[in-house]
Length: 188
Image (cartoon, rainbow, N blue to C red; front, top):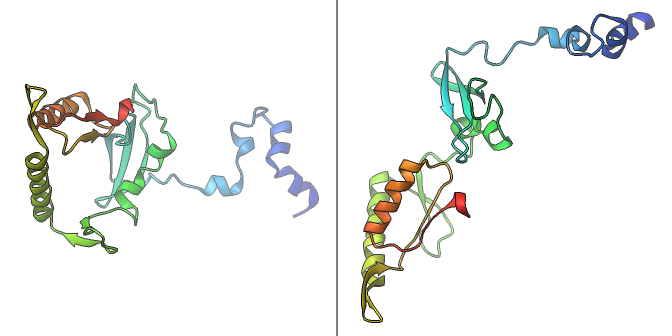
């Protein structure tokens, strides 16, 4: 390749001498970029979803190929985010395909140093037993002569990705269990 041909291949040269003075079209393309294909071209289907990280509710397009999620991008049809995602939302593909994703219930015993796998039924029974024990040991009937019927033995901190209906049900559940400290991450 001669020096002139080499210089003419520069995007800046093509931008200044061609029909694309702003460098938003052909002037910015190279042979390499012309050969690229979109990652989502081979997807079997696109599923509309909502980002799970916070309460904003940004729209996502989830591209699926052979039953596996291959790409997650912002949904340009979303009135909330108009196709944009924050860094956490843009990295949400790792929630489905990341090697660090927990796919099993893990438990570390008190003073233990190793995690052990538990089946879901065992883990749920352990949680229920601990809620019952916390209520039993921390239940308050009277406070300065007044009936209070509450426990300070446990609390709830909800995630910001929960919607109003889920937060309402959680508030009702934990109030019925006698908890006083019920809060949501979105307010903290």
